Image 1: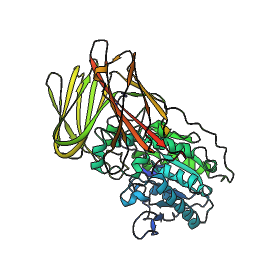
Image 2: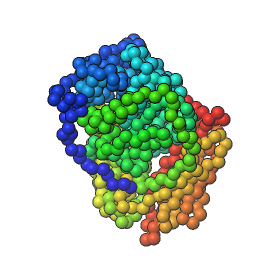
Image 3: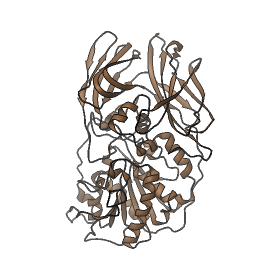
Image 4: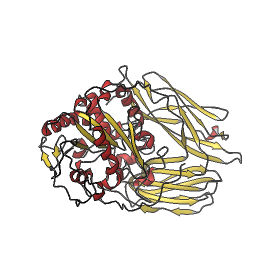
Length: 530
C-alpha cells in the first residue's frame, strides 16, 4: 500500500496574468463562446467557437478543447479555465459537446465518430488546414478514436492530453466488480463511457489502434498528475486502489501509456486541477507553439507494438460490498505489525450507519465525508457518501464491518499501510473465446490457508444492472503460490474475477487480501460485444 498523498494543497499563487503573451496587459475574462446548434434536440454534436481576441495571431494554431468523462464544454469555460488563458494569449478557440453533455457518457466509438465531424467543421470555420486539440481525461481517447478510426487525422497537427487514461482506470474495473457493482448501479455510474474505461477493454482498444498508420500524422503529448483534492476528497480516497502514483482517477502509468506519445509533464496535482489554467497552461502552451511552427503533411513512423502479458501487480487492500437491507456484517483478518488501517466505506445514503468492530470488541464509528468538485470531472465514485475510519496499529485477528441502512448498497476499501502484500500475476488481459487463462497469487514467504480459500466469482460487466455471476473458478495451492487455471467464458465481453486470499504469517496469524482481475473476451474478429 503506497503512502497517502499530501493531505492538503497549497493555494495557487500564480495568477492568470503569468500565462499572457504580454505580461504588462491585464488578464481579461473571455466573452462567452458562440453556440453552433447542430443538435437542436440535445447537446451531443453541438460546438462552440470562442471570441476572437484583440491580440489574435493567425500564426498560432486554432485550439479545439475536448472534455472528459461525464463533463461538458464548461470544463474549459469556467473560473481559472483554459479558455480565458487561450483568449488572453491570442489563440482562436473552439469547444465540443459530446454525448456526456446529455447526461449519459458515451464510449470512444460514439464520441469519436461525432468528434471527427466537429474537427472538420472547426477547421473549415477558421479556414485552416489543421488544428490543435487539448483533451482532458477520456477526451484524449475520444480524440484518438476520431483521428485513427473516423478519418480526422489529416485535420489535426497536435494533441495534448491532460491525464488521459490510455490504459483505462482501475476505478472503472471496480465499478463492475462483484463488490462495488451494487453501489455503482445506485449511483448511476454504469454507462457506455465507464464500461469502455475498464482496463481490459482499453487493452483491446490499444491493440486495435496503436499500430495504425494514422497515428503518424499527429504529435501526441501526454501529461499526468500525482496529487488529490485534499483530505477525504474523492480523489484522496481513490489512491487506495489505483496502482503506483496517480491523480485520484488515473494512474501515471496509464496517463503516459502511449508507446508513441511524448511526455509533456508530470505534476503534483489532482485529476481536476490538471485542467486548470493556473496549474498547467504554462506547461501546455509551449508544446502548441513549438509544434505549430511547421505543420507536417507526411506521417511519422509509428513503431509496431506488441501486446505484452500483464505486469505483476500488488494488492495491499481488502474489498467488501453489496446490497444493504437492514443490517449487513462482513469480516476480514488483519495480521500484527500493520502501521495503519484506512477504511473507506462508500454508500449512496448519508443515513446509512457504518461501524467497525475490532477482534477485542472495540467499536469505531465512521466519520462522514461527502466532497465533490462539481465543476471538475469527478472520479467514478465521487458522488458516494464516504464513511471513513482510521485505526493506528490495529490489533491482529478477525475484524467485523457492520453496515446498517435501508434500500442502499456499500463498497468498502480497507487499505493497509505496513502490512503484507499479495503479488498478482495474470497471463494477459485480452482473450479469445475458448482460450485458457491463468492467474497466480503469492503472499511473500507466508503460507496460504486452503481452509479459508473460497471459490472466485467470475462476473460479466453489464450496464444498468447487477453484474451476473457466470462461473466459479477453483484454485490449487502449490507451496507459497495460489494458481487458478480456467477456460474463459465463450460470450464476448468484459469480465471481473473477484476473490479473497487468506494467508498465514510466521506467527500463525491469518490475514486477508482481495484480488480483482479484469479481463476481456473477444470474438474471432477481435471485437468485444458493445
